[in-house]
Image (cartoon, helix red, strand yellow):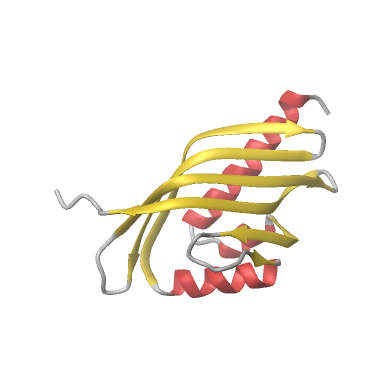
Length: 136
């Protein structure tokens, strides 16, 4: 497979993941993950390891929200063989039930591997800093 086609497929897998999250299609979001996926999120003391653990974290988190939206800012897609990396900024806007909106911005790194002809997420790492939502 040539690099441009592989990069387009990687971009499609990443965009499908973001879209599944934003649309609340949680099963679609989880389906794009490797069974041994690793999430490194600063609000947790240690990385979350495995699809089952990540699923539980997201089910708990999303169950506490009235609204949520993830935006990837300026993603860059890199392919090296069967490894794909997506580097981007992000803006995550979410509203806990009965509380004001929170906006979190930062950097995101996502690592994919090509498995049986499709890209699956094997690792994600966030570096974020909460900022106040615009009240204007």
